[in-house]
Image (tube, rainbow, N blue to C red; front, side, top):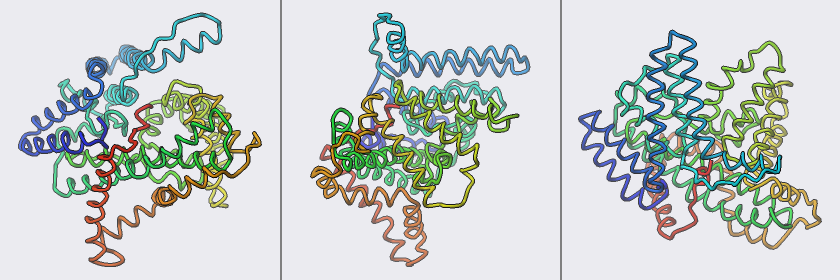
Length: 473
């Protein structure tokens, strides 16, 4: 079930909210409702995969109890953690990477292993990382072990963040499950945040998707003008940002409606002046997860020499790439990020304050090139598309198709570029607080939010193109 769907907006969400506030007098009943609603939400599209998630919940509930019991016995605790990692990552490997691994074996050795067609459970990468962080946080003493499996299930399956994050660490939400406070202020802010995210998704990301899909469908397998290839790359750069940040905004808004507070997942990454800064601003919860559970345990940057730091970065970015998908394009994309982040750290480039415009151009150039590889179905098509961008096939710079897309989608490109900067935050503050222009502008805010919602609904009712691309990762 998509957040940006009529079923969710007009049936599921109003029903769950109505029942939730009727049960406001009891935390236990509210949590029971949220768990049932979350399981129903997940089962709506893929009923059989609910069992996969329930198995994950049950296993990690037991692992947490065991690691808490044997915390003072180092060998026993490490054994439990090792078995936990094998179980969780093994399940993820079977569903997400087994076919890719067998394909590599066949290509490398000539063996004729049959490649199974295994459907990928929605959000398995996210709920697996939630489960791992829960057990490790219990071992580290960053949260009390949960004796009631009901609350472990709620933490892992809570529907706002279930299928595409943000990735919540257990210690961030454990207390909120039992002691959160709802308020009308939280509810109002949550509604506004949700509608902003919905607008990003429906109005901007979906519009950019049309341009990107057309350009990549032509440029990956054939020759297109360089201008169209660049336009498609920029369109995808905007599409993936508004798709995923829009989803995160909706998740944060939904959580606030139910009294929960999630941390921010994006902070205007396209204003970055280095690749290091970009990853401090993009998908913050994923970066934090890898820092907390991989990079820091390996020693992070505080190691005896830079060789070990480079090793640690290589491991993290190799895992980050493969986490996003089972294809060489994701591995290469991860390694590109590793290479530039390593160079920035070695030469302290990410801390420089000189040549800001040039550094911003450099960062965005690498990001756009990276997204082209990320978007392509395989390395051959990625290479072909990049060749088209740089005119390696003698296909010219300009085309009528480029001009047609620029005319048709100029407004969406302009709005996409503007609203990927802090201008959106400043406009929001002006309207909410009436700082610059007083009461009239303050009154404009609810009118704008309502208008955005109505426009989004009109797009959805018309059945416009509406995929959530980050569900694939």
